[in-house]
Amino acid sequence: MKQKKSIKIYQNDSVKISIRKEWCKACGICIEFCPKDVLVPDDNGIPKPVNIDACIKCGLCELRCPDFAIAVEGVEGVEDKDE
Image 1: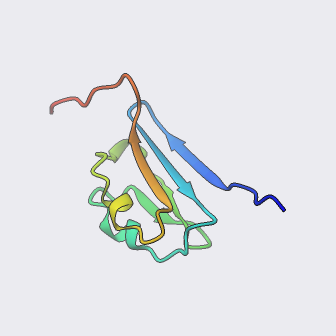
Image 2: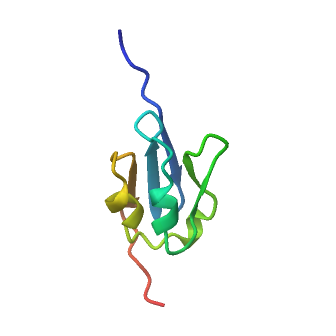
């Protein structure tokens, strides 16, 4: 029996955040470690980016996730701007 892949992808011009819902146990660690409050829990506790434009691609959510359920990537062809 094939398992349905449930990967939700959120993207803007500079960052892509992928969340594997079937791997996420809704522990909230990624949400707590995000320095820019990009992530909030949905009704089931699964992280959802609500302010993706604030993401600085630090990767703390990805590094701290015990289940490898979240990934943060820069979008190809876009360089970080110095502020």
